[in-house]
Image (cartoon, helix red, strand yellow):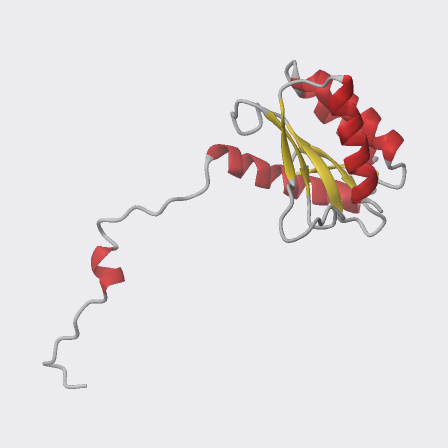
Length: 156
């Protein structure tokens, strides 16, 4: 290329000074740091259930009560799942260590409801589309029965 020729700036570099990169939120950064601590704890063979119960104890109400009850339901419905934390949330993993389901407190990401989520390791496939997360405002006997059935199906 001739040194006197001027190369046009790409649209990306020309706009680079005007555009601000969107990074992770403070909540997302905290979750990633928590995940790094979890991986360190896993290497030291920390007790997963103790870690889950400690995370539940830190939650504000009503999430704490829901998380305690979910812990009981999940343990009773799928004893093959191992409690552990996952990005700072109570989670339950299969024998391969893959998280099958987790509880996200409303406070975790400042949302208006808590969430019971299922990963791709959960066997909830139903046709071409199925839900993988459920909003929770409270737990009644009806929701508890549905959750128990979902957890059983997830590990089947």
